[in-house]
Length: 84
Image (cartoon, rainbow, N blue to C red; front, top):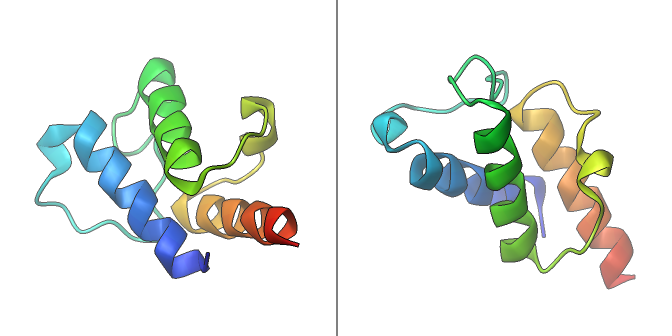
């Protein structure tokens, strides 16, 4: 899965969990914090994305990325490793 495809999954999950952002354009530089996601929202967003990607990794492995672009890159890399 490419970074762009992963970013689309992240954006979908954000809009599902935080419907008030339905009309907002999301960018690579946005952070979940800046978008108003609390810790429960962030966990739910990441779990939704992992499920959509069929990735089974510990949530702690998703804490390094600082913004949505880095998160998309990180998760697409994990998917590539899984695909082998």
